[in-house]
Length: 344
Picture 1: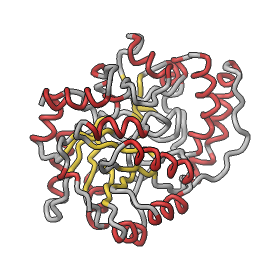
Picture 2: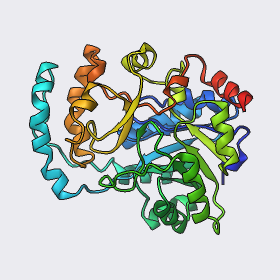
Picture 3: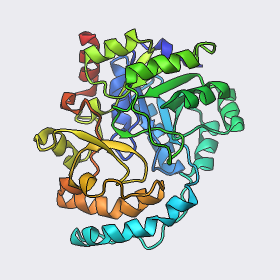
Picture 4: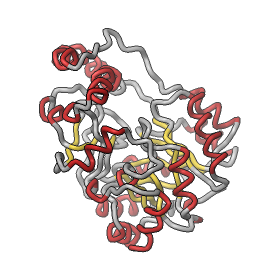
């Protein structure tokens, strides 16, 4: 079974759902001696298997796949979604977007994805937003897949270790995109990544699991600090957003380099889950308004976000980015990976 401790370079390209993670990005990071993840979030099982097949065409090295773990939203939060819809309606109409009148159930095609990964295993599967059922984890273990749990606090780390995860991805508050809290209703902690690593290290001491540090890492100094704090490897997402192989949208790329955005903020406004992105007018307008209903709010705002992207309205787009967004640079992902390690 593959272990993250076997990496030539302890640098991992984070799974970025929504299109930024691509087979080409995975292959480029792998070629430099690092490790790349595909993102299965928001994809069907069929689309996931297509990306796996494409990745195998591009690299013969181990790679990973990240799954979003579905969980039911709190009924009270779901009941508040129509009210949020009415708040957003004028803004959507101004952009020419039509908000959905009903939101179907969405379990991320979970059962089909697990079945596909059992029939055609990948070296590593990681989980975000929760943990698999014990029988699912055991089945994947039996086919030789190593499993990594994303954790944001000590309790989540303890639950993951007890389930038999092979490694823990410790995600600090500096990370771009969604925080990987195991409940959408939980307000994520603010303990800085390096301090959080120490907390999780104490929790899993008996299991001696490898730790992957994630959040706000964009240069060699930060990588070195995370490794010195006990991480086996580091995971970077925002740093790769401008690379040639990333599937980052044109609008997102433009926003990252425009100089228009000077800070990031954590918001539920776009999806109902806390997520960090470039602070824009949409985040400011709807601070504290979105219910903690995921994926309901995600589906509600999807047409609005798509219309904003089409119109180039960056102030209404979800521009996920971590606190180290200023370190993102265009170029080859393989060259970036090598450069980061040379800085270390």
